[in-house]
Image (cartoon, rainbow, N blue to C red; front, top):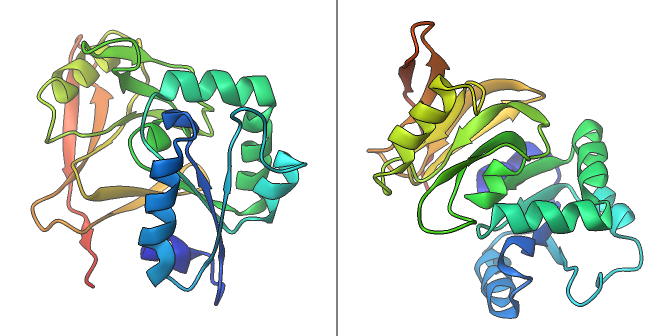
Length: 214
């Protein structure tokens, strides 16, 4: 999060928390407020249950320097964002230079899609993301055994486009639609570029991330 805040170039950036993927759970939001107190940031949040907590969600989104989206159900997140017109607002913010970030569902949502357990314990391809980034995204790559083979199968079969994946503790950094680097808080973590190999399979390139120090 410090890395994301530093990208803004602001001394005291505005950090917007979005927990749609966990149903705007108040405990999750409270924990995030507690965790982010150590950063010199102006923290606020956006909820949609039972109604938006701000008068103009689009204006709130555009006022932020960084948006952080939690994990949870990416399929439910996408449906609610469509209902409230938030996808268009996030796209506008991205074009304006707001740093969009997140973890798990909060990473998948900015891409074309990835694999999700939103529909049950068995992963399935999901390609209804905002597609600001024209790639698939692989999350929990080294911690959930299904993730790598299902992503490979999805890309090889055309259900998902080529994409990038990350081990736990590793973040993917894009500028515009260009992948520029991976960063990590885990010295053992890696990122990966996964592409069709033209013969019905995939080729996976391991990417050495830059280690962030405390």
